[in-house]
Length: 347
Ligand code: SF4
Image 1 (cartoon, rainbow, N blue to C red):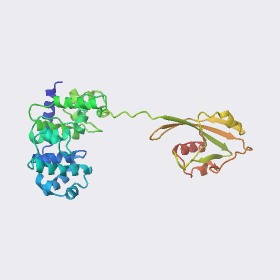
Image 2 (image 1 turned 180 degrees about the horizontal axis):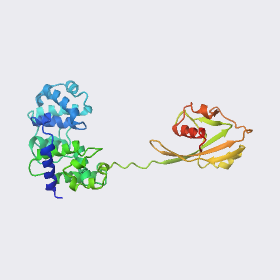
Image 3 (image 1 turned 45 degrees about the horizontal axis):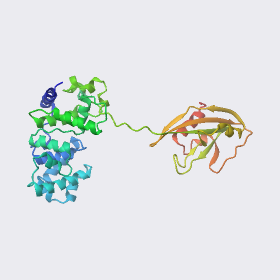
Image 4 (image 1 turned 135 degrees about the vertical axis):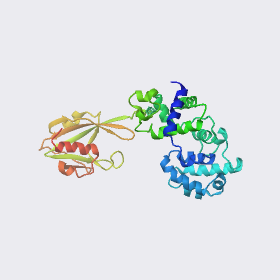
């Protein structure tokens, strides 16, 4: 598909469905565009509107904002979250009051040098406030482009991000740049949404590779998490006359202070352990996998029925308890599940 077609389709859609009456568009002065772009970083339009309206009544221009105290600016920001944005906004206003004659500079590099303005925000201000041909790559645009191209890699990777910027730049139309940038934002916010892209209503659907995969919501792909290390252990479930042997886990470590089964290293030879007791029966139960934040635990449970005439010596951290009573103790989830199974006679 030609780059031209992309912007033509988007602009035609914008004329019918785009948002043209947002408070910062009426009028779209550079000050109001800058303010809205900063407020919209990580925040939805519907949340921003009332804050924006209150803000511009109290701070109608750069000078009034620069002359206010940071505390007062933050009072008007309170509730929007990400307060560094509010602080940076104030700092930028002070700089613009001092260095730019209390005006938003019509220069990409000068914008980029201001606190709280990154490449995408600077591009948005250049396009929306001054009608200069600059691309943006905010979360919405990134999502649309990753889906449109079915980008197979995580867009946070430097080389992928660079490629997306190049693509965004190559797609810019010669004319109506402000409408086009707004259209990109609107499409991402209202049609190509994070979890439910509405491809049937999308002007880009014919050429969208993400849609052709049948799973556009799969894009942008997430960062691959490194595989968690695996650990293995064996749980010895001693059972004797409807009672099981439980052991209190050390306070430190996983499931600290909870009741579990005696645990041994997977490499420990079983013969020596079993030789200590009169064993009536022994069953290998289905292994359990449990995932912790930093590792995966593979547990091999072994049900050992001890002859009723045998006595197992217990230490202070162990107790024989009936299956029913055990369920009222503090048990890790996999232990609880295992005991429930034993209770139902399922092994
Ligand atoms: S066709 Fe679907 S996935 Fe592709 S850009 Fe449009 S809404 Fe997003």
